[in-house]
Image (cartoon, rainbow over all chains, first blue to last red; front, top):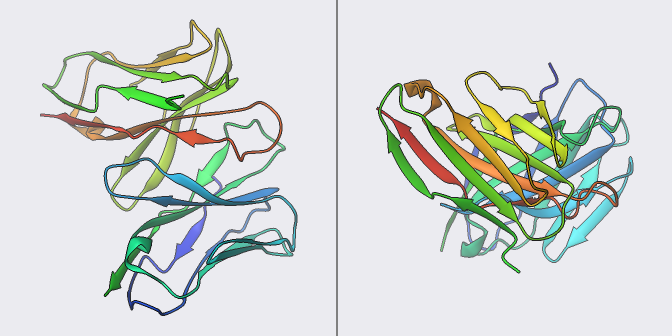
Length: 113
Length: 114
C-alpha cells in the first residue's frame, strides 16, 4: 500500500536552531499536511498544502509541496522549548475518498533550553 | 464549541471483554474517522464515515465495528478485546468539501487490554 517515509525519526537540538524534516513517498498525492502532537493530545494541523510547488508559512513554520508531488518538507526557524512534540506529515490522494489520509510515522523533536 | 470530544479518556479491559468508544463533534462535519496510534507507527485509519448511516473500512478494520446513527456521533466498538488492541485511539472529523483545513482530532482514548 501507499506509505510515507518521514525523517528523521527524532531530533535533539539547541533552542534557537532551525529544524528541517521531510516526507517522501513512491506515490503521488494531491494534498500534503503537517501536524504537531503534544503529549496526551491529538494531532493539531499546522499547515495544509494543496498545490505542487506550493510554499506556505505559518509563523516560524514553513512547508513545501514537492513539485514531483511525492514529497514535502517542514522547516521550523529559531526553535523554542514549546516546539517540543511529535510532528507528522500526512498525505491524501483525491482519487480516493477523503478517508484515505495517510500518515508518516512522525518526527520527535526535543529542544534543549 | 467543544470540537471533537472522545469518551472515555482511559480504559483497561480484560481479554474478551467488549466496549464502545464514543466520538462526538459539534462542528456539523460530514466526515468522521477512527484512528489508532501505536509507538513508532503513526496513525492508522480503522474505519471512517462520509455521512450519517454510512461507514467504510480503513487500513486496519479487523476486530472493530463502527456505527454512525447520528451525524454528530461516531461509535467504535470492540466486541472481544485482544491485547493487540492496546493502543491510543483518536477520532477526527472534517467537512465534505472546502479542503482539509477543518480536519480536527479529539484528544484520544488510551486503551489497555490485559
